[in-house]
Every structure is written in structure tokens, then in C-alpha cells.
Length: 551
Image (cartoon, rainbow, N blue to C red; front, side, top):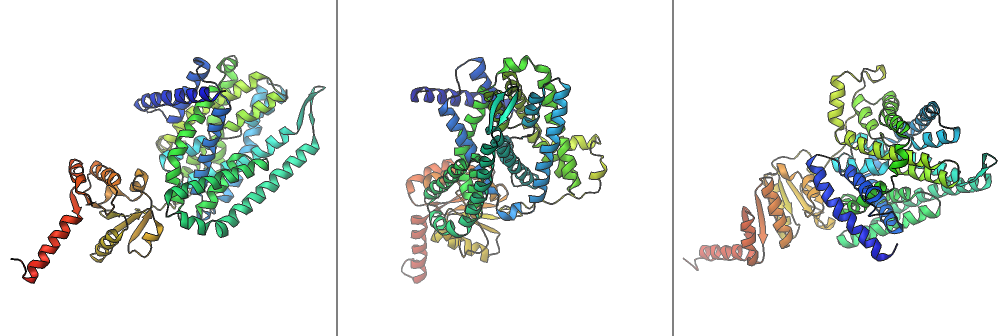
């Protein structure tokens, strides 16, 4: 595809996605479903967009950034308590789903090789879909969110083993597959060795290599972003060289940076960039769908979709419940696996290229993927309401779930527990002095700045981040604050802060250096303006009067 053609297709995707998302919001349709349907519309239906190397590269970049963000959430303190359940549930689900899927495909009259490929494709859940939705819900850091991410990591390792094994199959010869044992052995050794090496490298880097340079870069947000993305793609490249998936490299890069105190601010900066690329990924996923092939096999498509949407969650409820977790945690985690993965498409496509399966199996896999991703998106978004509804129906009367206490999530935000507090933004000399005096008066105070050095030594709570991002203010609990104070000298940020304070009906006091911005802030209904020049003149007049110089 030429450069012009690629840009044209990106423009078509961007415009159509914006229109469809606006329509989707009116009917409360998840953005992922909108993107998938948009891809089907732009590709198979209208033929305006076709998958090329350019779109494929953008899609893979989106996946890398998404998994990088997941890694930034996974500090060792957050994942050490879910490692066991993630391994047991991840491996157990692969085994039970593959076995159940094979029996089901056999009952649907598929041949042995076709049933094997379909059953294997059903075992992988989509890390990209689940992480994107949990991130939108703000529950990626919840207990069930951490368990789900751990399970997907285990599944990714299983995928690597299966794809490595499949790569060593030379094709069909005399009615059977010819396996190159040497190629398989070398591939597996390279993958395992690479995984151990990358894991060791990321752990050592997080402790010895990254802290000092990133502490310097944290004072310069643009440099911090560039360095972090460079580190991400460096590990992605290393993972590729060892035959590992780009997801593994990006996840390990994020995990190594998650041990640093700047991970939350970095995550907020990467997030908007990821949203763009990941939207292209889902649209491209819809473009790949060959609906005609699946419609010719509509009955197997429906049966296999129902198995994934209901069978997979039931398997997980059983495994997680048996490991001592309460029914709500077991249910919320199980809902996250009710879809098949983009890896399933890759796996089926590789089988087709080897001549092991026909095109109809790839079509069925793709259609099951679209159906399960769309339906499970609703299940994940409305998981708490779905749980409450099923609970009223008495759907959780399983003996292994009885009496299991719910594990309390350890999500602690900077503004957690604060109410009627004062948020002070900008830790210059004025901001630091305001914080100190407010704390002396007994006020609950939260100081916010983008420079970690400026937050050191301050009394009260602190939050590293830029208030340009709404998520920073949300983490600061700005809707529950009794006052927001900005000591900043940045006009655009002060205007935005005044607007957002007004949107939640919280009073704000804004520092004004240039008198030309006063009118704009008054239009935004800022409650108090700290005008340095005017206040300085007033202070001088008071002092002169006290000295008797002026009447």
C-alpha cells in the first residue's frame, strides 16, 4: 500500500470511528463494539478499507502501548498476592476449555484436525479487549482485575508454546502433519531462554538501571514520556528476537517502570496515545471478518459462541471459587474471559497456511471472535449489575462458594478517604507556603505537582501528575474538595482548572501574574483571583499605614 493510500485509509477510519462512537454513545454501546462494527462496515460491506502493512503496524503499536499500560499498573506489591490463582486458573481454564471445546466440535461433526484447531482457538481470551474495558471502568487495579491480567499473562505464555510448536509443522504429507522436531525444540528453547532473560533484565533494570535517569527525566515530563516509550519498544524488539510476542515485551517494560514512583503520571501521559492506536486495532479486526464463510456455518458459530460466553465463565467460577475466593470475585473474574483472542485468529491463519485446515474454519473462528468480543464487552461493562441480578435469581448456590469471604481490594488513591479537603496545584514558592499554612490551620490538604522534587518535604498528602489530565483531578477527589487553589503561572492550565472546578461546583482560587487574563478567568466564574501585583501593592499600603507614613 502506498503512503498516500495508508493516510487515506487512516483518515476514513478516524472520521467514521468518530461518527459511529457518537452514535454508539446514544444507545450506550461500548466503544470496542462500535469499532468492530465499523471495521465490518468499512471492510467487508463497503470495501473502503483493507488490511495492509501500515494498518497492521499501527494495530501492533496499539497493542504494545496497551500492554505497556497494563505493566505500569503491576508493581510487585500489587501482583504478589494473585500469582498462585492466576497460574492455577490460567492453566486450568486452558485444559478444561480445550477438552470441552474438542468434544463439542466432535459432536458438531468436525474432523479431528478441524476440531483440534477450533478447540484450541476457543481457549485464548483477549487481553486487549479486557484491559481496555477495565481501564475505562477504572477497575484494572481491582482484585479481580489483577487476577484477570495474571491469567492473561499465563495464557500468553501458553500461546507462545502452541505457536512455536505449530511453526515447526512442515505441512501435510500423506494425510498427516510432518513435524520438524529440531525446529520445535530450538524454538521452545529460544522462547523459554528469552523469557527468563527478559524477565531477569527487567527486574535488574527496575532496581539498578532505571531509577536514577528516570528520576532526572521525571522533572521534564516530555523527556520522561520519550524515554519510557523507548524502553518499551526496546523490550518489544528484544521479545521479537527471542520468538516471544510483543505483548510479553511491552508488559515487562511496563512492569519494570511500575516499580518507580512516577508510573501513575507516566500512565496518564501514554493513555491518550494508546487510545488512538487501539481504536485502529479494533477497526482492523472488523475488517478481517469474512462473514460469508461464517454464515454458511452459522450453527457451529452460534454453538461455539455460546460455549465461550457461558462455558468459559463457569469453568473459571469453579476454579477460582475452589481456591478460596468469594463468589463475587469469582464471578467478576470469570466474566472477563468470555471471549476469544486475536491470537485465535493468528493461530487459525497459521493452520490455514500450513494446509491443516480449510478457510471455513478461519471464518468460523473470526466470526466467533467478533460475536464473543461484542457480547462480552457488555458483560464486562455491566458486570456488577449482572452479578446482582444473578444473585437475586439464586444462581450462585454452589457448595464450594458458600461461606467464602470476599477479599478486600487494596486500591488506595491519593484522595482516598478525603472529603472537604483543599487541593493546592503548583508547588512553587507560593504553593508550598499555602500548603504549609493550611496544614498548620488543621486543613486536610493535597499538594499536586508534575515535579517529584517539589513535592518532597511537604506536610500532608501529595500527588504527582498534571491537572491537565482529568484523571489526576479524579484521583485527587476534586469533586469532594471544599476548595481548589492554583499557584501556577500557566494561563491555559488555570483556565481549564477553573472550568473543571465550576463543573463540580467546587470553589477555586487562581493565581494571576498577567492582568490581561483576569477577564477570561472572571468569565469562567473563578471564585477568587490571587493577583500578585495588586495584592503586593495592598500589602505595601498596609505596612506604610502601620508605620505611620500614610494615613
